[in-house]
Length: 322
Image (cartoon, rainbow, N blue to C red):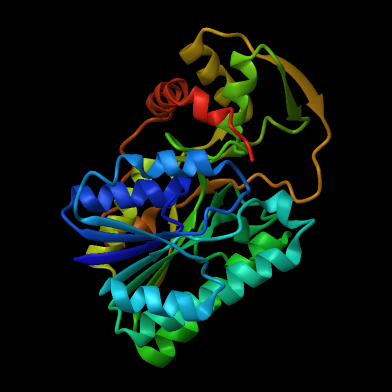
């Protein structure tokens, strides 16, 4: 199995690369080292992958069509996992055109390149944010109303429709994975658990939104990677699947878990929620269970401990910012 992974130096992409290498795949990674956060962190994400001869890496940007076609052709891949993306809902509110250029036009480049070299399966990362301000506690792929409220969510919903069109026109097997709130080792510095732990360990105050009693579905990065591997093995046709834990956890519970793990009490200040902030609810993961045998393995408390261990190891790198 030869797999090409876009966004390979990122949080989820690098974790997926590691999972596929463990399963014996040959993996080509692509990343453009976007300066949204430190290049040093991303290079560290890749460090454990390079010792195996079955991993190669190419620096490239999915919005550069000709270069991406050339990379795909040279990789000899028969499967693609597409994780490269402009990320962050709130950030997209001020940079919408960047998100549309990369997430929509760049994704079309990935789809076209995959079709041109005869890729058999294409797995693409979508997001639970496509559900938008849905009032349901448990979110299902069959929910009729999708109401994205940020450019990021709009671009990801567009990707789902683009994948459906590509399947209908060319017959390539495609899975769109609506990933809920991912956490674990290599988590981006702007995401809640990473940000909270850094502030708490520094004795600084956490600013929480006043409605932080609402719940999110926190899914461990290793469980996401195992789900992707199962998709490459079992998926057929065009499918949209939630990838989450199936459980809801509030921010207060998140902070309590960090306090228990670190032995540090959090200092908290409550503020109003900004535009583009939503609570994603809980994933109905029954479709993924049925189609690919997806089953989360890591409990939240265990995952926080694993993140804390990683966080302490890379403090010198985490504090480097471009």
